[in-house]
Image 1: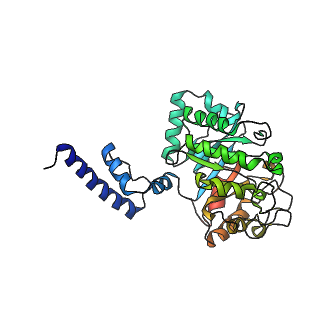
Image 2: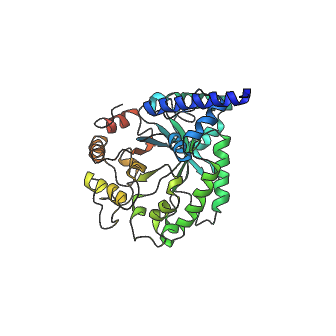
Image 3: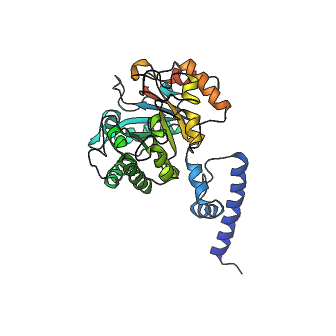
Length: 339
C-alpha cells in the first residue's frame, strides 16, 4: 500500500513524464516552466544533465551587440525597441579594477530600475550580460590570478543580476608569449564553477587569428577550446582589426583566410574542430568602429546567407551600439533570418 508521500512521488513522475513528452514534441527550451518543486525534481531524472544545460543556453542563432559608448539620455541599456532583432546585449566593460562605461552605468541604477530593465529585456527575449577585460585590460601580463579574477567577476554578475559574462580577452603579449592559454583555461574553469550552466551564459570573444593552428606557442584558442570549450556557450569571433584586407570579403571571411593568418576563416576554424554553431561572426557596425575589417550590412547579409546555406547558424555579433541598432541587424538578417 502506498503512503501519501509515495503516491505524490508517483503522481509527480507521471506528470513529469507527460511534460517531457510535450517538451520534446514542441521543442520547448523550458521543460520546468509551471511545475512545482517535486515535479521538477522528478522531471530531472528523465533528462540527462548535459541536456538540461543545453536547454538553458539560448538556441542559435545569437544576435549580439556590444555597448561601451556614452549615449546622451540613456543611462544603462537602451529601450528594447532600439535593439529589436538582437537577442544578447553586452554591457562593456567590467575590468580587473572595476566597472567602467556601460557596466558602471548599470551599477548606478537602483535595484528597482535594474529589475524593470531585466524584466523588459526578458520579455523581449534579450539576454543582458557584461563583457569583461576588452582592449585596455591585460590580466595575464598584469599577473592577475585567474581563479581570484573569476571569483570577483562571478560575484559581480550575481550581485547585479545579469545573465552571464562575455570574456573579451585581448592580452596579445600573453598570447604571443604562450602564457595566455593556461590563464584562460584556469579562469574559464573557475568562472563556470561559479556561474553554472543552466543558469548563466559564458561566451568568449577571441580575435579570429587566435584560431590559426600551429601559429601560437601555447596553442592559441584551439587549445583553449580543446580544454574548456564545453564550458563556453559560444565564441563572438572578432573578424576585424587584423589587417586592411583581412576578412573583408565573403570568401576571406568564410572559406579562405590570408597567409598572414592561415586557416582562420569561419569554415577553416570549423575544420580545426570548433563546432559551427559556436562561431558567431563578429563585425564592426561601421568603418569608424574598427581600424579595419568592416563589411557593409547589406554585403554582410550576403555572407551570412552563404554561411547558412553551408550549415552554419551561429549568428552575428557587432561592435557597437548605437552605431549598430535595430535597422543594422535587420539588414544583416534580412536574407536569412528576417526579423
